[in-house]
Length: 151
Length: 423
Ligand SMILES: Cc1ncc(COP(=O)(O)O)c(C=O)c1O
Image 1 (cartoon, chains in turn cyan, blue):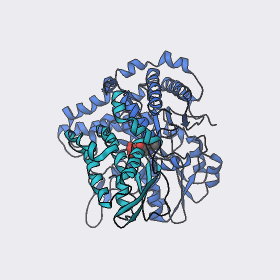
Image 2 (cartoon, rainbow over the protein chains, first blue to last red):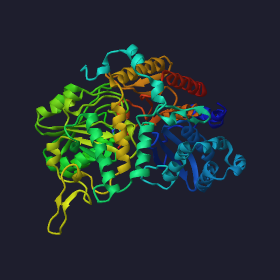
Image 3 (spheres, rainbow over the protein chains, first blue to last red):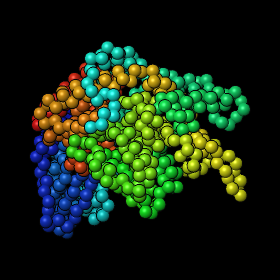
Image 4 (cartoon, rainbow over the protein chains, first blue to last red):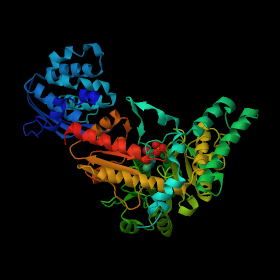
């Protein structure tokens, strides 16, 4: 149970249940679909970008708690951010999940709530759940027509 | 409902008296291991079954004492390995009651077996105005080879619907069968729903319109005694690794007169009689369909698995598994929020379920943490997931070595998941 509660922290369960910014977006000018065929996570990310700023960010779909919480926190963190921030945040997020363990604490500062997903690193089969929203956001910002996957 | 198997009626009491599960468990060494500090509870045999000592030992003994290529050398080891390889073919033929060992072709699994039929038989007998009939409950490996065949030949793929209970809509199946139908390919036991399909009836219907009947038997042999002649099918595709044999093994049963008339599908060594640039002639069946060096040690292990299965009282095993299925169904149904998908009257010990408010992938992780191995996902049956309007399911699949205690462990772990997610 203790290992489990490290993975499924309160914050993750709460975002999984009541995701923020889970909605469609009429004004979106960047959209992309993401799919993880392994587990069936299937989401769409919508962004309204003006100049270099992500004015609005949302997602829709059906996904596991890890993926949903990651998408929820991602949209919170990057709303009103610069598009270049999306890249650097993704880089840090990915490092937290797959990089050297010793750095884990350092991510608290830069990643905020997203640091609660650090426990996913012990579940290699679940890392892709956490990164799917980010791959999908990347595809949206790059206007990629392909369905984003975590491969 | 056609009473297609011996286990359709409940006979749980005889199961205990003649089926000794603890004696079976002793033969599967992996069952002793721990996972995350807990005793392993392996409920994923539909993905691949665990291996008994006799299979592990047969494969290891082959490498230790006999290893060499088959059909190639005059030296002693080659003679012995050829004997061992061909003996394995006979062991399988006996298990399924084939008319001769020549009707058994070694493959890498059910997928390759189906592709062989689609490519060789299909390529020869299916044309632009013809139809291939499959069902909505097929595994991707009994869908995609036929889609490829239809793309190549211009034929049409027809699909028999599945009822909400998870049974084939037999009336529509009858309607879809016409003289245009050349191949009917149906799963014996659904890996997602557990449904046991009425194969005898389907084979007879297919023959009625002049079509051949292919059975995807990937999930068949580990649960049922299969007699291919009694079933009346023309081809039976089997997965060795799901019937307690080594991974990377499988076979195709085909009626001899059909195989004899079929062209090769892969070219190479062993499948030829004579090669020349003015024209190559092909070997007889089964060598014609086994190009290249086969998985010899795997075939030997699979032969051992076939003999192992034959040594078991199948009637008692079926009753035992039926009892486990009934118990697991009852226990899971008793948990608020759990929905079982697949309620066919004739069902093997496979249960797909979902829990309201918890994604199957999260269920899988919580269960794994408790040492309970189940499969989560679409189980390579995406059309079925769509029909039931779920992105995925959690699936437990019970084999001969599972027990009621293990089902209790699963149920406890499901309760833990519900607690963690507070649904
Ligand atoms: C019903 C069914 N058909 C086909 C297959 C494919 O078998 P294999 O992996 O041996 O090729 C499977 C196994 O996943 C299955 O369950």
